[in-house]
Length: 439
Image 1 (cartoon, rainbow, N blue to C red):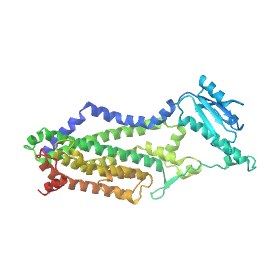
Image 2 (image 1 turned 60 degrees about the horizontal axis):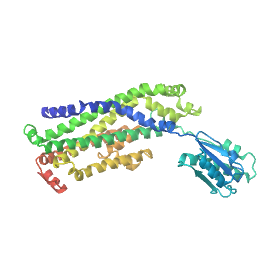
Image 3 (image 1 turned 90 degrees about the horizontal axis):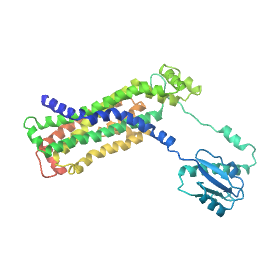
């Protein structure tokens, strides 16, 4: 254990004490926050100038009903000639010219847009959406129903479904959208850690093997101790990063998110946390799903629980896959030679990420449940299910199976590792790896 401890500390210090690791660890939560608000910022600042479009309306029913907005400004040209106006449009600063045929109500395709520069979906949708509404209104007039538009608007309904968990000790509001989003984020983070840090273990072993450093090291430590030290050292690096991120996320949920919330929404959230009757709030018109989502995000105890579970599954999943990556790294001389041998390792990780997207549809479907128990896919899939509120025994069983499989995999990987680190000049086949297991 002393030798393993020395190797762990060497691997840990080599990576954690780097300036790049510290900067990445501290800035990653901020980067994720910026990425989450980036679409909104892009929509705000990416808008161009208002496009001026001349309109020739031979039907006489569309031009006067087109409404200009910040994207498009419509300028009607009564009795305009198409060819002459096209020439004038080229000489002006107008974006283009819209021609509407006389039979537009019966033939909605009799409409053309002539532009003086490249068009965009935003402009075309702004035009077609309005004209579609005008044509529909004209067609409804044929039924001779007065105030039909007002009648349709008065009967239009938007439902906000309030969801409650009835299988807990007390009925609590839940938000499937928030649970799915949190699950996808947690699963993606674990996918990132398994792929990146697993390959780090393999690359480190390949470099030391190619430089013949391992041959010197195994004169003082056993190959199994060398492998376990590397695996646990890199696992400690990944765990450190998750702990730091977890602390930063908890602080953000406790301080930053409440500060950005409007007072009325924050009051509803605090009322839910204080044990207010959520069903009564729902009947009074409060959007319970939104309140439940914000309540989950600002609940530091809930966030801390997710961070702890993510740490447990990350460590277990990493130890499982890192053992296989270590065996591959000891078996080859270059990273190029490792491509074929790492394919069976990466396939379950990719499969788990694909199944993670199915959690949004049904977190309790048979395929998702089984994959959250199978150790090779459970770290990613189970973290996607946990925010949906699954039974504790399923989480405990998944963890037990994961760590039990890790122990078995370390035994197999150790047998390959102790033979592979002394092999040079030839890339082994899967048949040869099987023989190494029998030595």
